[in-house]
Image 1 (cartoon, helix red, strand yellow):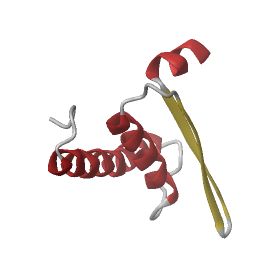
Image 2 (image 1 turned 120 degrees about the horizontal axis):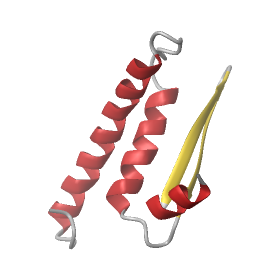
Image 3 (image 1 turned 180 degrees about the horizontal axis):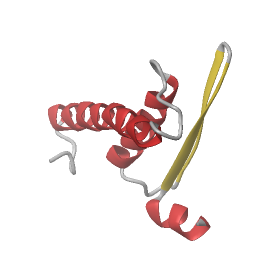
Length: 89
C-alpha cells in the first residue's frame, strides 16, 4: 500500500467531527497539480453536504465525492490554460 501511495505521488483522507472537518494529505514534489487538485477536491466532497455513509451507499458516497474532485480538476485545468501554463491541455 505504501508503495502505491508513493507511486501515485499524493494521498489524502478527510475526517469529520461535529463542528470540525479536516483534510490530511501528502504530496510528492513531482506530483501533477491537476492530480493533487482532484484528490483534494474528492476529500472536500466527503466533508461537504450530506454524506451517504452506509453499507448500502458507500459506493454512491465515493461517486458523490468524485464529482467534487472532477470539479476541482477542471477548474484548475481552466486556470492553467488561461494562464498559459504548460501541461494544462
